[in-house]
Amino acid sequence: MSNQKYWILTLDFVLLLLVLIAMCLVEAGTIPHFQSIGFFCGDPKINYEYRGDTVESHVLVLVTLIIPYLTVIITEYFSKDQNKFESGRYEWFKESLRWYRQYILGLIFVLFITDVGKVLIGEPRPHFLRTCIPKEATNCTNEYIYHYTCMNKMESTYFVRDASKSFPSGHASISVYGSISLAWYLQNKCKPRSLLLVPVLQAICMLWAMFCSLTRITDHRHHWWDVLAGSIIGIVITTYMDRLFDRQKNDNKSHSATETWSNETTDNGYLTGRLLNVVTDGKNPSLNL
Image (cartoon, rainbow, N blue to C red):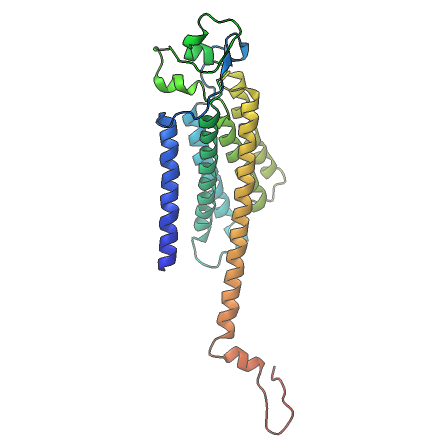
């Protein structure tokens, strides 16, 4: 490995580590809100009772991490004959790892952008008043509160602080990103004989994203605009990562083709000599093809 590649990999690792550390600090509450949206005391939109999550966070994370890779590795294995990999016996496995690496990178982008939005905006969740129990809302009627202090000591500090991190929806951004990425992959790589297999799998992906997103509204964990914003984040990052992955593949193919032509035409001048064998024995020069 050249020194340039070594330093590039080191830089990528350091930047990724810094992003992950920043995300952990945000989740731990070490990094406070830079700006928090206030609330009206009698606002019914933030006075719902907390009823839990239909889709738990750990379930969402496990599905987002495991299901796409299992699907990709199975698809690559059964389509290895169609792809005609020539660089190795297990090239299908390497191809699945390349896609998954790009997928995880996009997922980190989604998580980072979502966390930044929650820190910068700090919008109250629909169950904010009953979870936070702000001191300033005790004796007010319809006043707008800019700064507040949560008085709920029955719940954990993390849960109380999370009640003011509604925008954007992390469930929506993660589920939409994972579902569209997988559906896009199936459209481009899976070529089965069945006409309904790919559309059915893509429909399952979309239904999962819709279920995760809409239950955030019915569970009174997010407002509808939070879910919309999270879905937009997932769609944008999916599009960006897919275009980036395609461009890298095209660049690699172009570079490989250039190297092949260069090797053929510089093989001790043999091919060039065969194509340009000039006869100069007193006759007109000619090409010996």
